[in-house]
Amino acid sequence: MGNYYYLITGLQDITLEDDRLPYSVDSFREEICPSISDGDRQLVNLALEQYDRRNLMYLLARLKAGEELVLEEGTQEGALTGEQLAALIEAVRTGEPSDKDVPEYMCRFVSEYLRDEWQAFTTFPEDRLSSLFYEHAKSVRNGFVRDWFRFNQDLNNIQAAMTARRHSLPLQGLIVGDGEVAEALRTSGAKDWGLAQSVEYFERLARIQEEPDLSVRERSIDMLKWNWLEENTFFHYFTVEKLFAFLVRLDIAARWFKLDKAKGQEMFRSLIGSLKGEVAVPEEFKN
Picture (cartoon, rainbow, N blue to C red):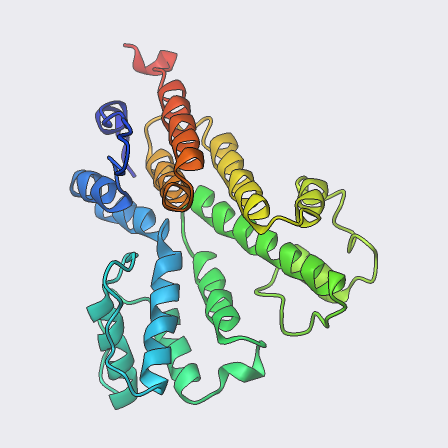
């Protein structure tokens, strides 16, 4: 794992024009990936792993509909291209070896999906795929990245539990993965599932869930994630953790820019402002 002092301090400032995004997720990734180690590149690619799962589910739906296995034009790709995901599906169908760059958990899921075996685990196939991914994420050696995906799993599970309780729906099959939070949600009958004291953002998340405006609610969730990344990279100065967090926040800001330009501009300014503040040279680097 390397130190990327010159790469991080040399990142291009983002300047906004009236009707276009000057710094895209793809262009940022294309700029940094040739300059980092293979291991760190794999970690950075995980920042956009959600798109791999989303695209895989889309292609599987097309398969069931008897349609060509291609992604829609303009679809955001993660670490894997649409061609790689389509080849994965075909490889599992025919029993051929899959691409070595495709993670094993995806092969396992496609096999379960084609045989309708995922239904033994969850209510929705997307949740089964997420569960397998989070299991895979536990094997990542980088502690920051493991913590990020654990945070996301717990955050999503608590939201699912709150929504289910609000609409008097059963929780069975809705909680993804394992761990203390998942176990508490599955087994506790307490009002807060016994999590209010152990999960620091629990009360804030409860207030967010009471917001009737879906857009405001989603933006608040994204800001919760944004703040987690800022807090947990505070002492990571010029390492891959900083690049990973920057890419995730860039992706958040880009999505809001597309939905609401004013909010997107605000988040971009916050992103660049925080980045400039974060890369102040610490004492040990000044010599």
